[in-house]
Image (cartoon, rainbow, N blue to C red):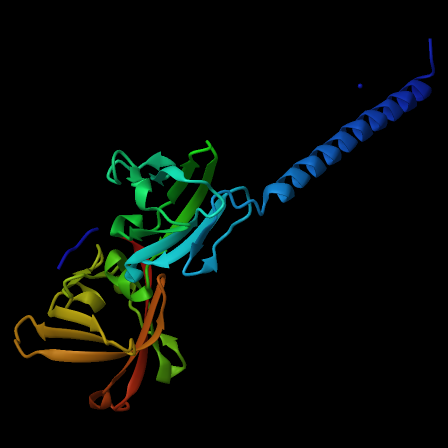
Length: 297
């Protein structure tokens, strides 16, 4: 358990000045429009230029702009296979792939950020396999493909690789702030106590649970903070239930709470559970909806 806490008439002169200003503004505006039109024409003219053609899984991944491509993958996919089309080139004498992270070469990739492919075995198409890494998540990953043939022809393309997480993968990577506990059977009344509003949970990759009770703890409605020891968490394979195992500080008996998943995204976790409150003269299945918001660790 952690606790962290502006000789002629002035009118005529003024009128002439206004006319001159209108003319000047008109010239500037016309020039601007022409300039923008020219830029747009240039952009549109090269928007479909493939550079070195790239595909993934036989599907086009072309993005607007000369030699620009975009590919999205989930980390769980493990790999990204990009196919380079070399069929319009002569005999390829050099082929390289350069990786950048936030526009800077990644020194851990190949030789100082560059992988050089042996051209001797290259055919009309070449499949490049990139192994996705944890460190690629939420980063600006660039892969530049460049090929040159024996006639000196050079084709280059830049691929932006977007690596994201599935909601399941994201759970251990975030701090989950407890934002609400709604008593569903009591007109969705808010049941989260003031002293619980600074609580957050870490559902760790090893299935352990870390609870931070914040500064407001150990008194009032939160006098029993820390009396429940959380042993393990896991999400069922079908992602329908979130399981929490715990035991009491003074009672080793293992308690298993099975929460029904209502919402699971990379930013939000919502789950409900039915609690027997018959001892207080209430129902045996009073439903409570627990809501958490993801924050950086």
